[in-house]
Length: 138
Image (tube, rainbow, N blue to C red):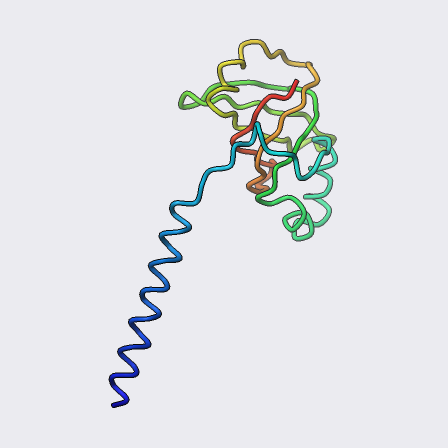
């Protein structure tokens, strides 16, 4: 009788696990362009937050839609995706904005030294702060 309970419990947990994985895998993608920003900041402010207290900054920024303003120091295309690098007050770090497909088409209009506002999803900090699915605001 106890083996039936154990088997039933395992079956219930397995079904629940499969359901959760299915829901997470099929979660709708966020349309950054049409979604309101969670945080508005400058590139230098975000970098300062991450370099002073990474854990606190992770809580504040990770997986949130950030609208960041800064000066372009570089633009390039890797694997058909545009990347805009924004200058910060930190000599060793910057904000890397990986552009969406539509924003990548506009990368030719951007110039070094230009001040720009970009909105994207923050995925973390590894010497640079990374934003993905980024859209050019202006």
